[in-house]
Image (cartoon, rainbow, N blue to C red; front, side, top):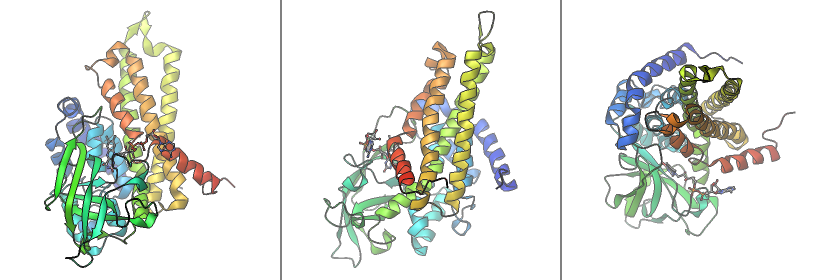
Length: 391
Ligand SMILES: Cc1cc2nc3c(=O)[nH]c(=O)nc-3n(C[C@H](O)[C@H](O)[C@H](O)COP(=O)(O)OP(=O)(O)OC[C@H]3O[C@@H](n4cnc5c(N)ncnc54)[C@H](O)[C@@H]3O)c2cc1C
């Protein structure tokens, strides 16, 4: 066991820390206020080579893996969870392609993500099917005019980055839409420019503003056989992709918590009350200490989860180890941002401080990519099945 980062990862952490302080921190409030996609931040990530962190070198990535991506996201999320989401989106839609895609798909779709000339998004959820993935109704029917091809119809919703994406990883039912058997779902690569592909309603969000969330409407979209990802029957692929993402989402939570606690700590050390600073009160110190304990625990869980994911350990038996990181780190983000607002008092509630933004942003993390309740279900299943067991 080794708790030290490799020299390469240490260097990555240090360089992203500088970039986050120089470029992301000064822009975070304006991105939130304007809700506009921050092209300048995307360009900064591209120029720093961060868009290909988790992609393999043979498609133009840097091969830093889930661990490298998680470290970068932790740094960026200290200031902006929108910017952190932009980095996350280099992995969420590309994950299924890396896990089960053909060599041709990898060479065709991944280099553009790595060099920033293309963006991608991930379409699993539908209005009636969030946690209940098998409730999806987007339908894929065999295309009579194209051997092995499919015709897609349906509407995906709450899709992050839907407007900016050039291509989408979309899941659809290849058999009866009412079917709940896992082999009835398949993954496809769908290009934005194809006929029948349209961006629908864009959501007005409570937080993580600046990267759109909205609908992808598919109307008689012809998908050639070569754009089917993996086998027909891809529910397991959806789950593998999401399992491997747990540390990446968790990293958004730990970064946010670290940013919020550091900010609040600096504030209470200079805020005078009762002839001393607020930081002199034991009641305040203990809140800071408890949050610091929480952050360190979440970091260890997240780093372990990233380490596992990079070793291909995201199949069923590893699920509880991945889910404990996502659950703990994202719930921590909610607690830590709430604490930060509280420690600043009225000032923390006002727009002059970033605390109110962290508070709004944090809540997204306990909902996306498997809610906290879904994670608890997975962790419990892991214990009941003895995947998470201690003898
Ligand atoms: C900002 C944002 C961005 C998103 N981006 C994407 C994206 O890019 N791509 C995409 O596909 N989706 C995306 N989503 C959708 C997200 O993945 C879903 O919201 C999530 O899976 C939860 O589904 P739901 O909202 O339908 O909630 P529901 O499934 O309706 O859940 C509602 C409540 O019931 C609880 N619940 C549900 N099932 C159970 C159970 N079995 N046991 C106990 N409690 C349960 C949930 O925990 C939750 O508290 C995004 C959502 C948000 C908010």
